[in-house]
Length: 293
Image 1 (cartoon, rainbow, N blue to C red):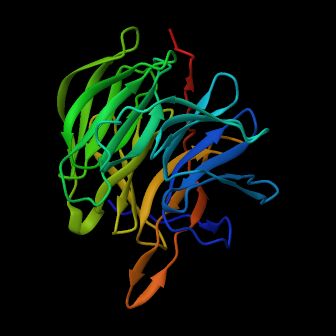
Image 2: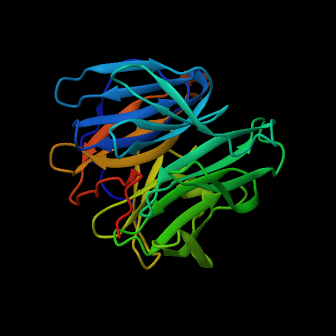
């Protein structure tokens, strides 16, 4: 079950508090990711090693790419567009104006061209989170409610299956996904992981073969799960706070992993960005405003 870990590179010496939401931009050949509590979006060029910092006006939980090469960002104050060329930030909608004690968390653009984003109580004490579908016209649709920490969003390569996790349980859920309508149905258990060994399911991605890669947070794991829900391998990272994997790079076979700062044996382990090569390619991320139909 445990696999031999390939050579892992630490991409940057810059420490992060809560690095999350890595996203490969094949048009710019850049990796985008966020540092949630430091209110920042970063870009990383794996060829030059250049790291760029873009300060946001509020906490930023996740990001996606848009059809017009901007970034769609889930801020504490709502969903915004960010143009990295001009620095302009444009408000779209706040799906949780009625829940000021919440913050937006894990989010991704789906195969329907909409931004799917979940939320959580900002102090992780109340079950007040939900999952939203944000349309290109700015409509916010509450798809699921009563969530503790919304996480683990990903879609199968053909777009017919959506994956999602809730921080209350170590179980990853699967749903049938209708690309034309953006509706989900047939909720079911996909896999339940043993926390003590494999960590709590956090952020995730899917490879070209349909395998689901899940970050096992607080155990430093990256868990590869088959489309049938079988744990194929579990990779032990050199950090314990793994938050999300992402496939990208020149050949699509570089696995990038973000992590958060954590206390380990009375020493602080800073959040970081790691990378290593795997034997399967990723899939290009969907873009906001571009449905795959």
